[in-house]
Image 1 (cartoon, rainbow, N blue to C red):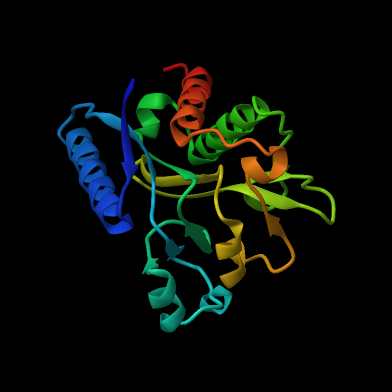
Image 2 (image 1 turned 30 degrees about the vertical axis):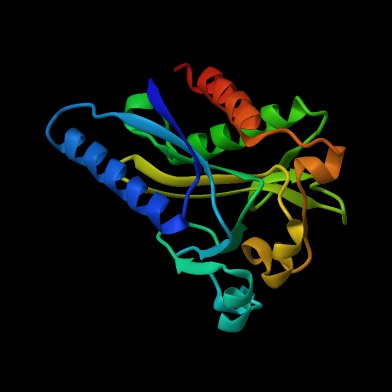
Amino acid sequence: MFTIKELGLVDYKEAWDLQKELFNKLIEAKANGGKGEMHLLLLEHPHVYTMGMHGNVNNLLFNEDFLKRIGAKYYRIERGGDVTYHGYGQLVGYPIFDLEELGLGIKKYMWSLEEAIIMTIAEYGITATRMDGAVGVWIDAQTPHARKIAALGVKASRFVTMHGFALNVTTDLSYFNHINPCGFVDKGVTSIEKETGLKPTLKEVGEKFTRHLRSLLFI
């Protein structure tokens, strides 16, 4: 089982620090022969751009003046993946999970996150899939109109995870114009609102995601 923390709107650095605290506690518990507590943090960030460990700075199309103008922040962090945007109307999930306890390898874990998102947005009439060679959840993945609705990027150490996913619900997609999202220069981004005209709350979407993730992981 895992504890769900619905945190609402949280500054990126504050959420990052909380992740690291829970991540380190879980690793320490394992090192001492215990199980530790797993968590799923569900939240929303004010404007922020983040870059993964091996991301390419050429995918940043903004400068410091732009960040100041929109009140955004920028962080280079320890997850996989390239650059992405987080902001209002986006459901962000950070599972702090022990994959050994769940009987999962990292590939199956990533697949499970993607699948839970695919199942969640299907409830809004959206058909989504994966794209070969590109982590995340896509619509019309095998066409010239491929567009990403959810990005994934995680860190794992001793089979304990942090970071996670970002699902565009009612996100202002114009903020993605200032980066090459996840390193792609020829792929678009989308949201539940853009695809359907619906404006579900992040709480509603988070509850659906959690239900599907539990069913996939049998917890």
